[in-house]
Length: 110
Image (cartoon, rainbow, N blue to C red; front, side, top):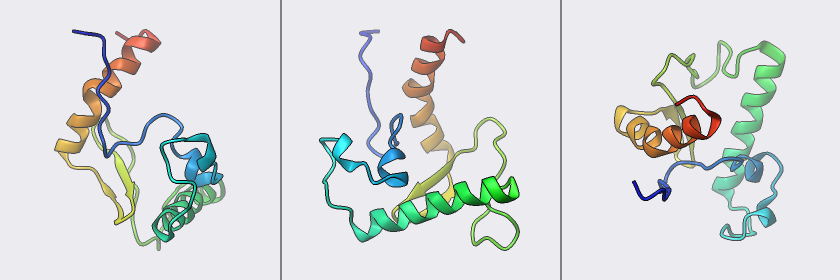
């Protein structure tokens, strides 16, 4: 193991949601400072999930167009410009190795 971290293109990094919750795009030099309509749509959905969770204790209460399933070990919700959905096994595998392994090691779980 070389100790290098390989980033997965379609996986959000730590604190990436800041761009969408607070429009702090200037904090991320590799990101365009201009918020696109797709970015704004993702932002609105993320904020709606957060508000729903605070109000209903459920990010997707009954009547929501999408149900965010409870985490059971290998299910992740993907919030994307094209829609929100539960991740497939391939996506989970790409996320787990090496990202989750790195954090498990850094935190001391491994």
